[in-house]
Image 1 (cartoon, rainbow, N blue to C red):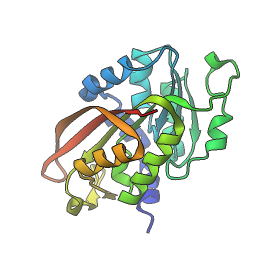
Image 2 (image 1 turned 90 degrees about the vertical axis):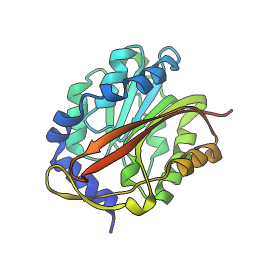
Image 3 (image 1 turned 135 degrees about the vertical axis):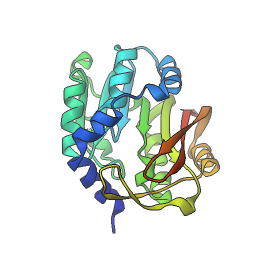
Image 4 (image 1 turned 30 degrees about the horizontal axis):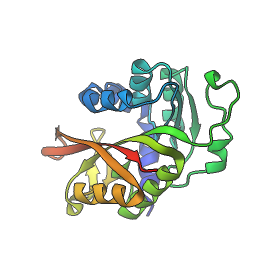
Length: 226
C-alpha cells in the first residue's frame, strides 16, 4: 500500500481546509527568518512539496528578490499555491521521483528572463517527511544534495518522535492518514552522511488534539558541504 499516494489524495480533497488552517507559518518565524538571512541575493529557491504555498509566501514576503519554484503532487494544492504566490512558478512533481531534466530546463520566474537553472541556491522542505518511509527520506536527502549548489542552504521541518509511534492517525477532518515519525538523531546523521553541515536545529512542541498529546516539530537548517 502506497501510504504517500493516499496522503496526497487526501490533501488534494482537503486543500482549501489545509490552507485555511496552515497558511500562517509565523510559529516557525525564527527558523524561517534565519534561513532567509542566509540566502544569497536573487537566490533560486525550490519549495519541495509546497502545499498551498504557505512557506513560499513567507519567503517571498521576507525576500522578494528570490526566484522561487514550488513542487507538489496534489493539483488542488498547486492551484492554491499559484493564487497565493503569483510571482513564483509551480509544477506537479512527486518528491520521491524527481525529474532532474525537467527541473533544469524550467525557466521558472519572469525575473530570470528565460535563463535555465542547473542547480538551486536553496531549498525548503516543510513537513514532507511524515509521509515518507525511512528509506524514502534517505533517498530524498540524496536528491536534495543533487539539486542544490555547493554551500547551498536547506530548511527542513518535520514531526519527530519514536518510530514506534508511526501508524494510521485520524486527521482533524475525521479521515485516516498514515504518519511516519522519524527520530531526530537519525535525521541529523542522515543529513551529515549525505553531505550536509548542520547550521541550526530547534524544536517546537505542538498540541495535537486528535492524539491527545503533544508532538514535537523539529526544524533544521543545513548547508551543503563543497
